[in-house]
Amino acid sequence: MTTPRAVVTGGAGFLGSHLCERLLEQDYEVLCVDNFCTGTPANVAHLLDHPRFRLLRRDVTDYLHVSGPVTAVLHFASPASPIDYLQLPIETLKVGSIGTLHALGLAKDKGARFLLASTSECYGDPQVHPQPETYWGHVNPVGPRGVYDEAKRFGEALTMAYRRSHGVDTAIVRIFNTFGPRMRPNDGRAIPTFIRQALASEPLTVAGDGAQTRSVCYVDDLIEGLLRLLRSDLAGPVNIGNPGELSVRALAERIRALCASPSKLRFVARPEDDPTVRQPDITLARDTLGWEPKIELDDGLRRTIAWFRRLDGSACQRSPHS
Ligand code: NAD
Figure 1 (cartoon, rainbow, N blue to C red):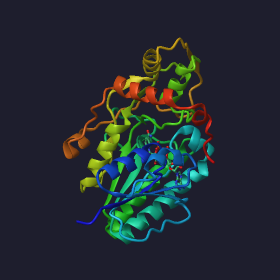
Figure 2: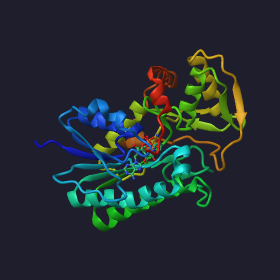
Figure 3: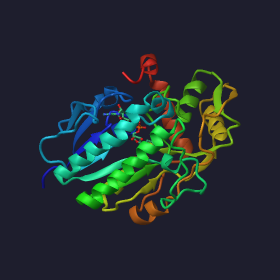
Figure 4: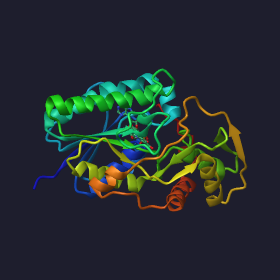
């Protein structure tokens, strides 16, 4: 049997690097394509000597040409944290549109299965709770977050058009908030921010009164769900996330306790269009992929905190968008 070969765009990012690792474990050859705008080669440095791994610096909005056979194209390239996509609004729209077009074109040329990393942000500030895949969402296209939400919604529409018009074997995953090692301490997402602040004994900055909810999934669980979707013939969209919902305030308090930190909570203004609730309905993933998250919140948080403790000062200071 020939070795399956995967192209992972955004493979040097948080999720992409875990994905590359797991694909290598599953005997794939992996070509990681990244322009390092929010990711870093350090995330895959430990894979560089692997005989089946290759790293290519490329902006996928320029072009995406790969020689030789490709079995799967996993399109993960995109700024993903609000700090990043608010600083890179046009790049975010371009990678969701032109980048997705190029990644789909590659899958079409190679007869590869295509997996789009979409997001729960497609549901916007939802009026249906929890959110099933059949919910069309409540997104403000002209608000600041619209650049991310609409880029992903466009990417989903483009993916379905390639499926319907060109017969490409596509899949869409709607990823809910995921956390774990290799998140950047300064990426502005709640969990890395709270951990960084708790470890530095600084106040934990909770947006609003902290009553808004989030459902957070540990990265290993998420990657398992993605790989099951990749191996299936489902088109999706399929929600992958952890339905365990808690308030942002409770999350801050949990992290503070696990870090044994003396930090206080400081309540700050809520960002515009910040979703009030967020919880995946994972019935479809359970029924069709036999997938559900296994890692308890505290366990995932402990592993993530341990990784943040090991980070050296230079990594903390690393500036994105280089
Ligand atoms: P990340 O910022 O760590 O990773 C994104 C990667 O894409 C980075 O390495 C970045 O350098 C690369 N990239 C961006 N634009 C590029 C371009 N034009 N060409 C080549 N590479 C480019 O973010 P992440 O959290 O790992 O997210 C990965 C994917 O998963 C994104 O598509 C994101 O929208 C999606 N997602 C993530 C989450 C989450 O909770 N982490 C939730 C929903 C969806």
